[in-house]
Each structure stands twice: as structure tokens, then as C-alpha cells.
Length: 630
Image 1 (cartoon, rainbow, N blue to C red):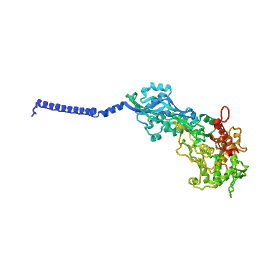
Image 2 (image 1 turned 90 degrees about the vertical axis):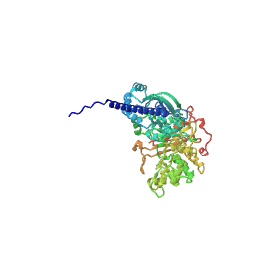
Image 3 (image 1 turned 180 degrees about the horizontal axis):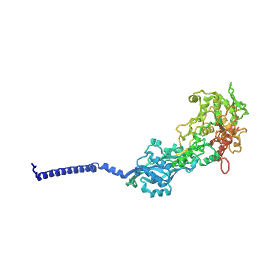
Image 4 (image 1 turned 45 degrees about the horizontal axis):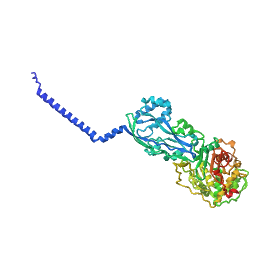
């Protein structure tokens, strides 16, 4: 039976539509209320918060790096300054795919893959957010033009003008003044990020590192308004940075050049000190290097050549070079022997050309194989007689010898403002027992008395020991800074003066040193002849390779770099000391023949008037010690 056809209920459909419209209208009203409430919350209740966020999108605080302090020599000649330079910077947060941007930079400027790797390493280094990182320094006009033309391809890349450290004297002061370089990861961890905001360089070596806090200055800030691209539209507020303090060094440019010329291109070191105040007048380590490439980033190839050079130009021989002092310490040993009471000025030793310990057959040779006969203290210093000092060292013993030589600064750091200085070594019984677990042997005391064996000293320590002889034991630490921002450097840990039982003991040691250059049998009398002022000095030879017992040194059988080092120390004028000099010439063989002339040239450059060739008036003195007049 067919189903009945249902008729459409229009009233029911109308009621359904009305209900749906009502529900939809209520939902719309509720959602509108929610939106209004949210808008009210954001724009009224949280107005201050979001207003600040909006401002931060266009207002930034940028650090203003301070200008680094300048460095001058004692005469006002500038040694380290700051010169303007255009640098290429990258802000990683604004560069997007910054690795791709670096590729574009390399393409635009036609640079090498090594430079590309260097750029990436610099950008990856830790830094503050939105801080531009310099990747290329000293842009040329052509490079600046290329960047400008391709700016649309280089988001986050800008050309910025900034001051860059520059060393106009180049290699002349590389080892003393040092250089600045880019802040590395290790330095970032220990530095205060606030103090170094906007600064990308820090002192790495020398004066630049030791006085970093004074040279750096204080960072400033400015609030700037930027557009969406990050470009500065206007400056809203500014706090100027405080520049670093200027430093005047005690070094003299002209004396430095004279010392370098005196070395004549040979490997070695020269140190000149004013014994009256500890000022370092010249400090030469040869060969040297140009520090300027280290400021902006030296290439891998150039650094490798310096690092791997057999002549070691990066090695500071003045502060880090360790050499046996040889016979240069004999005047100090003589003074120690007098003060210890084991010898007198008239004590004599017979020298047959060698020395033997009691009940021992081993012969400790004098450099003069034929011997000098009867030798007293004065002649022993003048002739550099090994036999006399073997006997003196044996009488003193290693303990007293160690104590006295330590008072002269040997085996310890002596400088006031040279952090790279090596302590050297003044051996003792305890040191050998701890180092080798062996007892100290009497023969080791003998060779210690002539500056050989385990003893290791730096040229700076020898210069300081010479200054102590000149001032008769007055301790003033050598220093490179003459003044920092107009203030004199202060020694926080002064050394005690060397006080002897009888001050005349100094005179006997100094008279022997004068005889070295002015005596009839002095080892360096050729250098002293004709000098217009009296010099007190002492030669030395430091063995590089040992010579077997009974063998004689033959330079023709020894490679050039295995030959003995030549040393010479001196101060002058002997009666009114104004300069103390220590010279070391690597593989120079003869202290008197090679190193002594270098000392004389340095002293002449400092003490003599260029026009008259006579001693400068301010260095002349009518006083002479009684012993020196004899």
C-alpha cells in the first residue's frame, strides 16, 4: 500500500530558522564583546607595557666605544696612535641568512676562501645582540663603491668609520709596546661585557696588555631611533665615552735605533736602563716584526711564516730568552765573596790553566789554557779568570752563592710592568733535589761560580744586576712606563736594597769591571781604548753545546747556531752611572769582541754630544770614588 505524502510544515521551519538566527546573533554578540574586552585590556590596561615594546622596536641603545689612549716615547714621539679607517660590518640579526650574505660579500669584493673563513669565524664569535661585527678593515674606495652598488643584496652589511690602532714605528717597538688584536672567546668570558660593549680589540702583548685598563677608557651610550631596516634616523640621547689614558714611555726612539744598528742585523737582545730610576731607555729583540697586521687580522699564511721562522721574530729575547750568564756575573760573585768573608781584595790564587777539587782528578779548565799565574780579585775580574772564581765558588758553597745571586735579581722576575718576563733559574740544593731527585755535587758549585751549569737568566735580569752594581745595591725595578696619564708608576712590591758589611766592597768589584775595559790586561781593552768616559763592564760567553773534557772549542767544527752566545754588561760613566747596558748576541762567540762594541755604541749614543763628541754636560761629575782613582 503506498505511503501517504507528507506536507511541508512551514511554521515549524520558520521557528527553526528563527532559533538559528537567534543563536548566531548571540554568538556574534558574545564574540564581539570578547574582542572589545581584549582590545580594552591591551590598549587600556596594558597600554604602558605595549607602548614600551613598540618604542623598543624603533629605539635602540647603542654603545659608543672609547678612544684608546696614545703611547709616546720619552721625547713625545708617538709610538701607538689611532687612525680613521673604514670597516665592513655585519649585524647577524639583520642579515637573515648571514652565511649567504658572506658569500655575496666575497663575490662582490673578489676575496679568497681563506678570507671567507676568517669572516665566518669573526661573526660566530660571541657578542651582544644586534651588535655590528667588523669583518674587514681598511676598505679601499673601490671596495666601498662596490658595497654601495650591491647594498640591496647585502642586508645587515654596512660600511662604518672607526678608529683603528696603528704603530707608526712598526717593528722598532713590537716586543716592548706590543699590539692589540681582536677579542677572542677566552677573553670574552673574563671581560665585563658592559666595559667592552662596542669594542672589538684588546691589548695582546707588551705595554698594550699590561696597561689595558688605563688605555681602554670607559664606554659611552646613545639612544637612537631606527627604521624597519635598522638604519639610524636620529639620536635621542647620548652619553659620551671617556677616552683612555695616554702613556709616556721611558724608551727613546733614537737610542732604540742606535741599539738596533749596533746589532747589525744579528740575532740578539739589547737592554739599556737608567740605574738611577729604573727607566728602560732601549729594549731591542732582533729579529722583530711589524705589529700592524695583527690589529686588523693577520692572514694565516703571513702568521705561519712568522711562527715557523727559524729566527723566531715573535720571540721576545729580552724578557723570555733564557741564557747562561757566563762570566758576566763574576763581579757580583766577587762582591758576594767579599761580603761573605771568604776572600779579601788581596787574596790570591795560583792559576796553572785549570782548577782541581781536593782529592779529585777532574780538571776544570780556565778559558786561558796557559794560565794567568798568581791572580788577585782585581785581576781575576779584568782577565775573567775562571780558576779564581772556581776557587771562590767552592769556598762560598752553593747555598750562599744562591742567596747572594738571588739578591741581585737572578732567577726571579725583576720588571715592574712587563708581564711576559720569564723568571729564569738560580739553582740550589733544594731545587735539584725536587727537580731531579739527586744531591748537589761540588763540581756543580764550581761551574755555577762562572755562570754556567743550570743557571738561566734573561738579558733584562743581567741589565738589572748591572744597574745594582752601578748604584751599589739600590733596588729600583726596571719599568717601561715613565708616566701614566701624568702619574709616575708605583712599585707595589719593592725589593730590599743590597746592604753589605762594608760599602767599600762595591768599589773593589767596580774597579775590576773598569779594568776589563781600561786595564792593561783587560779582556775588552780594545773597546775601552780612546773612550772619553770610563766604563765598568764585564764580558761573558754562554755555551750552547757542551765540550768534552780535554777538548778545545773549534768554531769550524760547530754549526753556526751551535756556537757560543756572546754577552757583555756595562755601566757608564763609572764614577757617575747614567746608563747600564746588557747585550746578548746569539752565537756571537766572543763577548769582548762582538758584544762589547755593541754596548759601546749604545752608550755613545746616549752619553755623547753629537756635535762635539764629548760627554754631555749633565752626565759629567767631578766626584770619583777613592778606589776608582787608584
